[in-house]
Image (tube, rainbow, N blue to C red):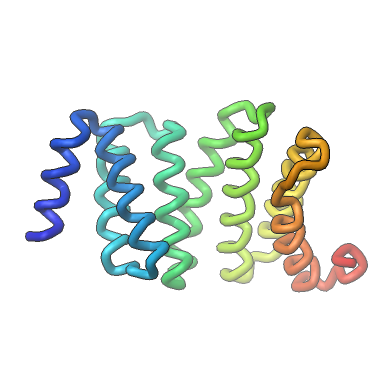
Length: 173
């Protein structure tokens, strides 16, 4: 009953399905960040259902919601359920040119999170390819930012862990 009241309020706040999807995603992410996955997952599921019903499959906003939902599934340890969602996100992101810094950053995050899911599933060669691609994007971002802060070390950490797991220690150094 409480969830249905929440959905009613979301519909009142946002008349469009896209707007409703975004509000539900924000509420779900807020719950996820408070480690309340039991509350977050139904909100993500409702957001994804709205997006899939009303938006094209390659919509970037839907991809964003799928990505945050997949992260929640990773947080719960559901790597098998998260991986296909990350694959869908990457398919959508690959359709969008990524010359601009924010687009590159979103692509790098999608690559790293999908790579993490694959690594947890033991699919190391696939994970390594995604982490290498993410690191390449982050190096471009760092160069574009000319000394400003970037999250290249974060991506390098994922890449190094995966090199170590596939016994490529020389590359990890």
